[in-house]
Image (cartoon, rainbow, N blue to C red; front, side, top):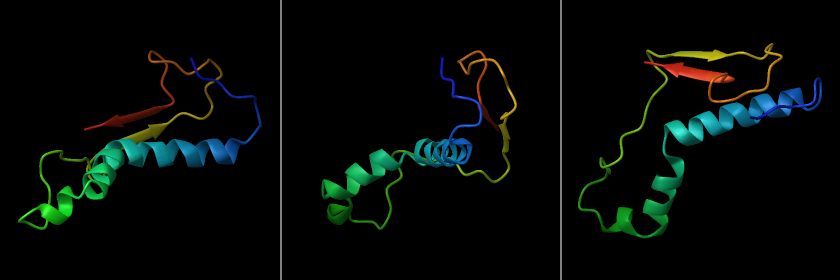
Length: 82
């Protein structure tokens, strides 16, 4: 479970939550490695379609910042639904 001290670094936690959300939804590490390993430069086309990523358009994002119980898989802080 993940938890935070009440009132401590609240803005930073929100920033990191959204940074991680976009990092995971766009497979940023995968694409960063793809470019750094030279695969993008070697590709005969301008794009890479092997690992699709999500866009937030058309999805609902919920962030429960008032929850008092520790965050866990059963009690998530953030939910993205199709």
